[in-house]
Length: 192
Image: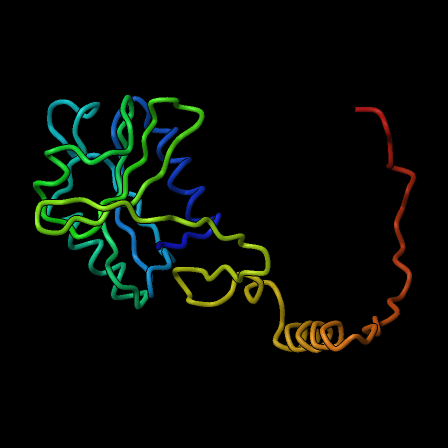
């Protein structure tokens, strides 16, 4: 079974809708069958992008650096079937990938996302579970730091952690009383 976060799932689905009716795809990375990284890649097929999704050697190199940088395992390539079901085609199987991730857009507004395991010429369905992002920390891929830390001081982050610990242990956190702000309401208007 594969697990994917809502955030990663939404990246894939937004890409699928934005590129429709052309095929699109990318690389999936993660750990322990949990998809933690999605690298969307534009379709590089030279002739008919509505029937085939293609990658270049440069795309593979970019994906390799993406996975190494974020300490992720390669899980597989994902791609869309804009007018079809999420079942591997003969062409999909010819690439000798262990896992195939396919988004079927036969009903465009109700996409189907399937994972397949290929072994010795046979394919087996793999479950995909979408996991809530609630409470997850988003890490900036350029800095490696949580997004919150870009606009907060270390003291503020430590205070926030202490308050969360207080809530977890059943205590009501104490909020500091702030001075009143002086706001000139003379410029306020309800008219647009």
